[in-house]
Image 1 (cartoon, rainbow, N blue to C red):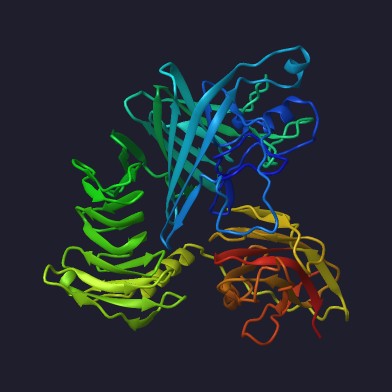
Image 2 (image 1 turned 90 degrees about the vertical axis):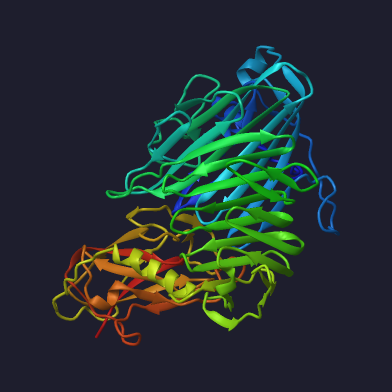
Length: 594
């Protein structure tokens, strides 16, 4: 989310806009940037309507090119002018920001040349809060206010990188791209009815439903691609509130978009509501605009002094999720959390007997859930394995008290059963098993001429699916390289024109700044050997962002000897399939083996 003081230059009227990247695809792009000319496209790209923000009365933000100049050298925590806040735990993030100022009626270069004087409205404010429940639920809360008592409208815009978007039920929209990532959007408002529109490739000014950051299906002589723009709108006076849930998913033959509904209610100084995921799981959430503890009765019953709080449960797992932001306590039907100091806390259940908790600062935590008296706690290492049992004090009211360190995962266990690490590994292995590849050995075909090489640049795959890589400059790369090869099932194909029959080895130039990556390798549609079903690429020390972290690695069947790719003269297609974790790649090289 774009928040905080305005930048020095090259700015658009885009404060509080969102960009969303998930499942290997940029799902919420903005209008992008093309030539600095006087076209309708350039006028559009500079305005709020080309971004994922909010229009008021159909008008765009009008900052008037006021810039914030950061004094150098910078000293201090943050500039006094900033109105943005960001809080994070290992399982939940929360961010908020505000735009206060003018809004201007649409204008462009042609209208200005004709002497058009657009209307300007003053003293309007847009406040945006985003709650991210990891890994795949974003709750966006928009609040607009005016100092007058006149009728206004608000339009929340979402430019979706998808082939199509359809409103399925009122303010629920499902956007899909075949064999790739999709996005479900669901919106609700307080008291006022909602309206949903979807615009794609509108040509007449003001244009709408275009992005220069998307390159598929670009019409001739137009520097942008048409994409669906979802517009949720409502009327309001003095104050208007809207909540939107964003939920990515993978589109496939056996995958259905999630059923999603959001409900919004209001108390003085408090917004609260429910997100129904359609699988008997309902998230109850609250945003507290006061400086004191609040109590919400009814379906979303909770008591908290935090800036934002959320909990969820279902019949099979009573406590699925709990979180609080910038507070000390949360009391809810699924459990109670009391912290010794103001911070952020999250709990994420992996099963009915195992949950993971974390905090943003060192605190003492007092926890009470159903059957808490039977729980034990473990501190986990960076791989999610049990490192040591954590000292826990059990109080008379059956609550647990434990000292927690910031950004460390703790495993809460009740009774017997698999550990958090085992549950996560089982889930990862189940996902991998869905990628069913057949084995077909490559028959021997002689010896290739000595010193024969075929080199392919990794940033130029001949095809890809289930995701989109991003070409980028990297330190030490041979020309360009790529990044964002992150998602399970995201595949890349490379075509090699082999000059002669023979046995070849394949060498890969790659870098990794995180956990080891796993890839399957198919040649002409088949695994040449069972050993190529899950190739391991270990960490190299970084992503080559500010130093050279590249490593050359041959493809092997036993971890030592280069695998013999027996290839006939002609064209062969190598497909790499992501099984787990991210990896950057620069060059692929076929080299003759003796």
